[in-house]
Length: 233
Ligand code: SF4
Image (cartoon, rainbow, N blue to C red; front, side):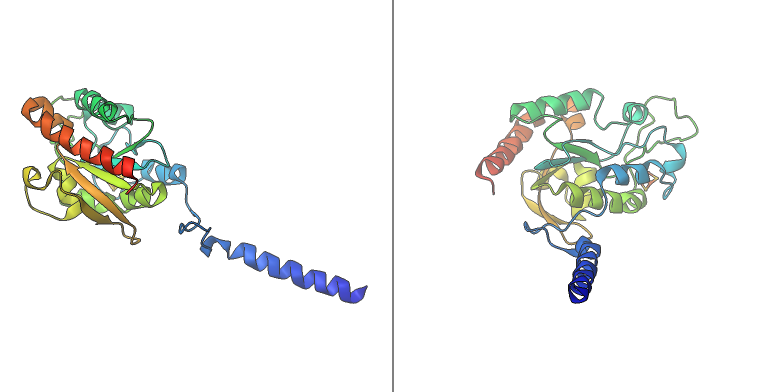
């Protein structure tokens, strides 16, 4: 009886050790157990002050969509309306993005949408209520925010990334070529943790509002994406 109890104690101790180390285990589909949730990452972002944008934002714009999305769309940064709503792509460009998604059978609920920076870059942060005060993020701001984006990509684990416009494309690819040259050509993005994701650059919806001739090129890119999704490659 004594031996049986000792054996049980040993087995229990072994089991506890295995459970304690299970954060490091591979859970059968090549994916390590997620030790941080998207919600926890969002809370970190909401209190972040790693760059000056954190001091002037109204709301951090973490991202929206399906946390298990196959496709992640990445824009440059929040603007006036996004800063107030805490959601990316809510203005006219956002409405156009919704139509682009719809054209290939996707939606805001099935993809994930984020930006290279989570807080609103302003030309003059002293006049936050002024309109036409938006500006693209600078390299230092995108570098400061990159760990959050990389963690988001690691947690969502999308099959494909679509960068919207030259700012996010250059930031992700470290590439100085104009968007007109790189759009429609698949590349690869590697997160800090080493995850590789196929990346397709295309124009920003705001560029389409300024120049509707670009719509046919974006349509070609979206058909390209749809074909990859259908083939599952
Ligand atoms: S932009 Fe990114 S790094 Fe800068 S304060 Fe906001 S969350 Fe932090």
